[in-house]
Each structure stands twice: as structure tokens, then as C-alpha cells.
Image 1 (cartoon, rainbow, N blue to C red):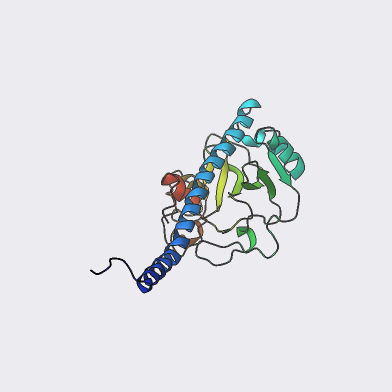
Image 2 (cartoon, rainbow, N blue to C red):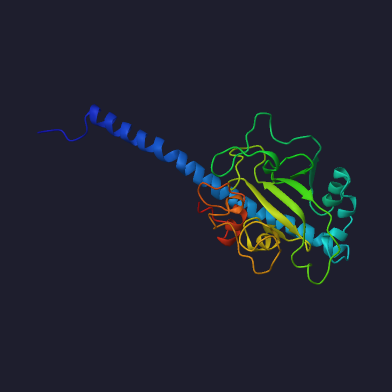
Length: 247
């Protein structure tokens, strides 16, 4: 009677095939898990920052964030972040740069970012939150507010790296950009609100409430979130798609 079972050769071949499949699929699974984790963390971080900035405006009894105590000391990074700390507990990083020497910040396309497209570019305030996310603040002083410009003005930008110095340090994966609205809300780059205040894309240089989101416009490579583009508009895509990284 013949014995049932596998020969050693058959077992080794099977294990070899399983190993090849695992080697091919594991990196993709790891990347997918990391992407979804970063998207979820971004959602929570944005909510935390918005609540803090909104509370700042409400508690100080002012009409706009540029009238708060924090914006009154824009010329001092340490004083600005001291004021911010009253609402958003974290720590101020006073180094000239945040990323380790030799770190390359990349666009979604894989090419290296330069100049102002590097989050810790000169002049930005570096603020590390308790959850490990890092804010690079680029506040600006607002012109006098009027009834016609109140709903399209913003008080600067916040660049968010959800996992600090950890990889991949890439726009659209763990680095995202937002405008700071006058009421403390964060407007995602690539979204409609930023399009309304931008000179980029269809509609010309004049701000307009009729401008459309840019994240899905392949012709606007600087503020889109499509394959081959730089990914600076991915915050808008994530907000619109429920913080699911479907790209």
C-alpha cells in the first residue's frame, strides 16, 4: 500500500513559492497599513489643531485669529509658541532645521523637494505635538478685514508631518499642507477653500468663491494629488475622501 504525503522536495518547493509570494506582497501590505495609519493620524491632528485655534479665537473674544495674542507676537517664534501652548500643548523646537542631516523630502512622484517645499524651510516655526506629529507654522499678518474679504482671507499656512522624522517623509504620504482660516479652521491644500484664495489654476489670480478644488486636476501639478504630481494637494483629497488614502 502506497504511503500518502508529500516528499521533502515537494515541501521545499511549496515553501519556496510561499516565500516568493510573501516577499512580493509584504512590502505592499506594510506600505498600505502605514498609509492608512498616517491618514487616520492626520485626521485626528487636524481636529486637535482646529479645536485649539478655534478656542483661541473664542476665549479671547476676538473676531479673527489675527487679533489673538499669539498673532500679536509673530516676530518672536518663542513667544508665539508660548501663546499657542496655552491651547495646544506641545514643545517648541528652536533648531535651524528639524530633519536629520541628509534626509531627503520627496514629492509624491518620488522626486526631491527643494526650497519652500521642504517643511522646515527657513523662517517657519517648528512645533512638536504630544502625539508625535510636527507642525511647521508659517503665519502671516492679515490686511484689514472687510465684509468682502473676510471669507477668503487666511492667516498663514501649517505644514504637518504626522510622524516626524520617520519615513517616508513624502508629500501626500506623511507630509500635508493647510491654510489657517481666520476662524481657526484648517483649509487643506488641494481643496476648494485654498483654491479660492490661490492664484494657481483656472480662474486667474483674483480670489473667487467660485474656484474649484485642484487635487484632481492633472494640469495643476503644484496643487494636485494624482500619480506623477508632487502631492501637495493631497490634504484636499483626503478630506474629500474621508481620510482614506486611495492613491
